[in-house]
Every structure is written in C-alpha cells, then in structure tokens.
Image (cartoon, rainbow, N blue to C red; front, side):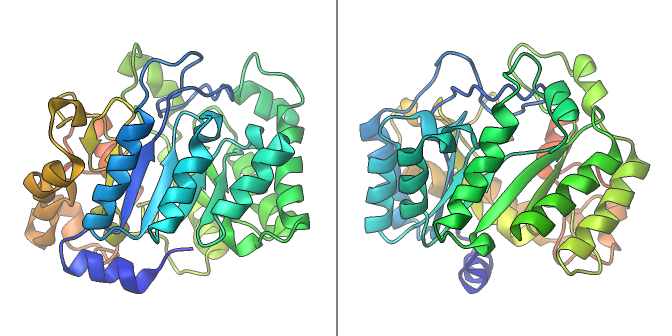
Length: 338
C-alpha cells in the first residue's frame, strides 16, 4: 500500500511523499468523536479548478500518493474526475471513506477502479451494533450493515484485501475488548488490516477541550491495545505514529478551507492558506521545515523521554495529539503509554 523505497527517499531528501487533500467537509456518518472536517452542511470546499492546481503542484513537489479526505470525500460530485486526473499524473490514489457511500454500486465500482494502484480505507470502529450506535448517535440502525456489505462487495469483485484498511479510532467511549474484537473481525472475516488512532482532545470547531476529555482512553488500555495491534502487524512493537515518523515527516495536508498544514488533523489558526494568492508549490517551499517537522531531524530536539526510546528511529509520537493537547507540534505525545 505504501511505496516504502520512495517514502524513504522523500524523507532523506527532506521532500514529500504524500498529499492529504480534503475535498469537502460534509459527512453523514455521525461519529460522535469526529476530529476531521465533518459537517452536516457544507461550509468550506475547494473549487474544482483549485484542486486541479493543487494536483499539478503536487506533481512538481515529487509527491507519490494522494490521500483523499473529507468530510466524506465520496460525497463530492466531481471526486472521480479528480481521481482520474491524479491517476493520469502518476499518483497513487488512496481513498479514506466512512464507508456509507459504498452502498451505491456505481460509487463502489468507481472507487475500486481509481484506487487500483493505491488503497481504500473505510472507517468502522466497532462491529457490535449496540456499541456502533453509541458511537454514532441518531444514525439509522442499518449504517453498520451498509459499511460491512460494501467491504464484502469490494472483495467479491476482486479488490485485494491487501489494499484495504479499516481505520479505527479508540476512544474512552468504547470498551477495550470491543476494539480488540473489531480488529480481529476484520482480520478474520475479510483479511483486512487495521489502521489505529488513539483519541486525544483534537481541536474542533465549537468544541471545548474539557468536553472532549471523555473521549480519551486510559493509558493502561492503550498499552494493552497496542500489544494486540503490534501482533496484528507482525511487529514486536508498533510506533505511536499512524505508520512511522518517516511517513509523518514526508506528508503535507491541504484542508478544505485552503489551509496548508503538516497533517490534516493539525489545524493551525495561522496556517498559510491557498486563498492568500500563493500556490501550494510556493507555500510548501517557503514552509518546508515546518511541514516536515525538520526540528526532529536532531534527536536532541525530541521530547526528553523520546530521546532514549528504543523506537526513536521510526517514531516521534503523534504530532497531532501533542498539538491538540496544547503542547505544540514538538511537544510530548500525551497518548504514548511508553
């Protein structure tokens, strides 16, 4: 799913491997803990012309993969036009979807078509109907069935399980045993790996950080979950990053309001913005050190407890969790149990 030689090359060259691109903020999945741009009605959206320009600049920056994000990216009418253009440019298309739009057969088939060199990540944090309902209050009872049926149809039609992920978020609202069971279900029933995020007080519009603390899972449970997660990936220990620090360092994000940040979950109020008149190419070149966490190239700049950590070559903790906790992007990851 990831071209690791190209990722390593981008990291060594202080370049970029992936572009996280938000194409809208509308999503109907109703995750109560959502930390992305997910709204019931659209507020921000990049124009089709702007997306075209962003992809062209991504090519000039040597980017390999485009991570299509939202909201729910599959709700954008022109999404497949942009994915087709990205494919023509030689990018890998990686689709991050909540999974509900895959209930539409045409959308499912086109998603599979344009991610054939990349991957599809769906989001299903629980396969228990009661717990799913708790995490998605007010949503129809059939949502979970639609998501799981979509996964099954993709596999039936020949989409490789090795090019799919189930992206999950572990929160304090969900029993540890259920999250472990969900990882096992996708592993056993579908042959699909899980991508794990541990919740912290991500900054979201109109949300108070104190109100969000109920979503933070206990450190002891995070430790136990990572023991299972490491086994899931065939590793002795898995880093606290989504993939590894090389991927985080070689990624930049364009949010649907035009902001350019190091990660789609780092929402900086003073971030450079495409609506200021500068192109993505200009912004990326002028802000490269910030976007690639250049300060962490020096191990001495790591948080003190990270400097001697046995995983320091592949992990510097989640920069987004540190930022959300008010520690800045170079602060200690509050979600790290080590």
